[in-house]
Image (cartoon, rainbow, N blue to C red; front, side, top):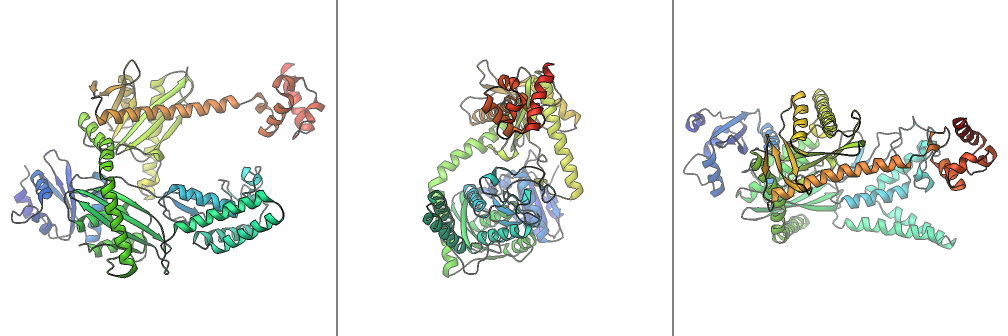
Length: 621
């Protein structure tokens, strides 16, 4: 038996993290302390007013444990990691983790490219962002591709120079084809420098150059070219217009404020990069009746534990208790000093007030919508957990098999986190070892490949001391959902048993009309009420897994149908195949043609004509 009074006497007066458990041994709260002895005792002092929610929490504490650290900074880092892992219900929690797009210029390559990425890595590339709008990032990348004609391919240059033909971007004059050596390395790097200058916000030169080109094209009666330059000018102006709030010092800042109404809280963040406001975002939080300063502190820790970009300065609306230690933690993560300030006057104070007003507006307008959305997602996940008697179903992976009479069998894996699809983690599998229509064997292959790959990645990351997020298969699910019943579930369980993995497996059972009926779990079918959020979520997951598998199967069928007998002839590629079919209007006419007639077709020569003639006549000989 755990005696709280006796265990309180054993607490050390050292920094660390404390973890509260309820009677079912579920973690309900995690906190950090400079002195564990003083902090944990405060929860059990009758004279101390903790607030209604905290008092409810204390009533549920059956036992606690603690981890001693060498410093308060280590305790803060550990607290962030444990909260993210266990998501205790009495901690202030973000409802979802958002990752923002960056523009990446691959300066580590001899011929740099421009890319859209979601993570910053220490790879000597240059990153711009984060941007709150993925569409805006796409617009920027398309624009600079037209402006600077940088390559977008994955070819390994200069190793692969002249190994393949130039791509379509060269044909439409959006790439200078460094893959063919048509542009020198020095000239290419000048274009990269111009790109970097543009991304740093220097738009004036570009606008001036584009206007000159537009006027020249117009004077030379090249009106289509002039119209293109006009459209590019408008695009550049739109990008410049998005950055309306400027700071002459040109520093990176985040402005954070929260609006609170009882347990409903919205945090608003303004992103200022290079002195220019590039966007904003808001976050809905779960809180256990905490004071605003505590909520603000919890948000800052969780937000910056999950984002790659940490600015030089963070402006907030009020002081937080652990400001100094959070500054130290953020400075260590960034590599340079980070300051958290509470501006009292001037432009900075107005920015914080603007963020605060925006947070209040979001809270007033979106509160009911957010609650409904939470019911559809997190509420449905909790219902599923309760139905299956599982502690967590935060991440669910669903699998399906698609084929036509055993032809081109494929498998799909869709991922839902907190009741929402996480499409970046979707995976598709081409069945390699199973012939014919055998869904059970196909599913065994898919699951084996998925989890073996994940286990190998985890081992490699442990050896390289990398974080889990850098792997494509490393994150394992809390629940596996199979499209089917008893047979599919047993196939999955046999794979997990061989790999020595313990993950709950559940079948999504359908009725005679191919509609979701219930769940098959632990050798019995569990009915679900059709008007429940859990039922709707299971239906959405099942439909999504089926859709993803069908789409992949359809794309493979299309590719297979495009295949022509002409593809088997050496020296006949897509261009010559198209030209032959256009000229002769069918394979039978090509078979009847002479070498001379074949050679007359555009893009054909005598050698390729002879190859086509020999192919058909030797085959018929």
